[in-house]
Length: 144
Image 1 (spheres, rainbow, N blue to C red):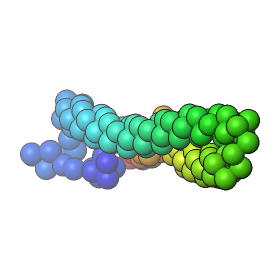
Image 2 (cartoon, helix red, strand yellow):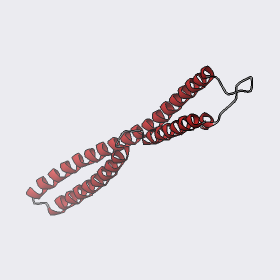
Image 3 (cartoon, rainbow, N blue to C red):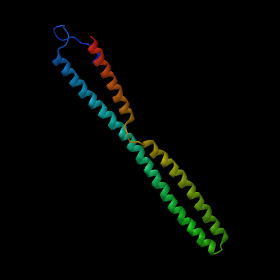
C-alpha cells in the first residue's frame, strides 16, 4: 500500500491523469481484497483446526468418563457382593479414569477457547491499517 502515497508521474513526465489514478486505485484495491481474503482464509483455517482438536479431546474425555461410570458401577456391584479386594480395585480404576477424563476435558476446553471468537483478528487489524493508509494518502493528495 506504500505506493498509494507515492506520487508517480505519467508517461509524459507530468502528474498522472485522473484515468491513470483510477486505474491504479482499481488495481490496488483488487490486490488488497485478494490479499485480505487469503489472510482471512488462513486465519479461519487455523481456528477451525484448533476447534477440531478441542472437540476431539472433549469427546475423548467424555468417552473415558463413560468407561469410568462403568467401572464405578462395577465397583458398586462388587461392593454389594462383599468381595473387598475386587471392589477396592474397581474403585481405584474408576477414580483414575475420571482423573484422566477431567484432564482431557480441561485441555479440550482450552483448545476450543482459543478458537473462539472465529473472527479473523489479524485480517481485521490489517484492514484497519489499510484504511488508515488510504485515508492518509487521500488527505495528502488533497493538500498537493
